[in-house]
Length: 178
Image 1: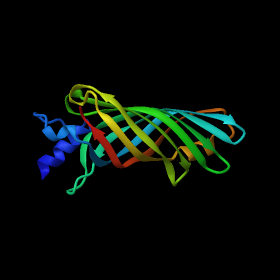
Image 2 (image 1 turned 30 degrees about the horizontal axis):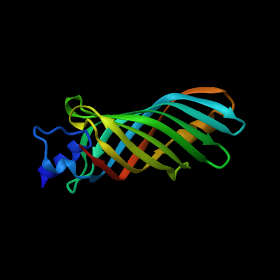
Image 3 (image 1 turned 90 degrees about the vertical axis):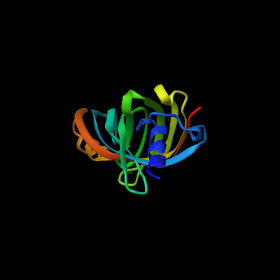
Image 4 (image 1 turned 180 degrees about the vertical axis):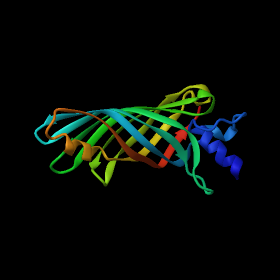
């Protein structure tokens, strides 16, 4: 059972196994999450709006029946638009997930939603390197952050260089290796 769980994590690009599995050509689905921190600039871009431009960075974990397995790192250059009146937000970005032996998975995403509820959207796998070359797939994900609070504090200034924290959650991330 544990070997199968490790192979699932390897297929998403995080945990590297010595031999390829014949089942790797089948589409698989995992649950994953990342606890990340963001650094960037928040610019007041309207009377009641702000735009965060920066990078989200953190550890990437894959859920297993025995609990989460740390499977690598994730870095996502991103932009997030924040409406200070209704707390709505929308964002987009690209990501690289790096696992053992520097094997990587590349992705893009978009989301929209509300502060505290989350920015929900689609996460799309766009390729990879090493054993993850040609990976495809994706699925829904939710991004939660404290960026709205930073935007609210930026009302009196035009640019704020800040850091924030948050969580990304992939409840059903599908992937397929060629």
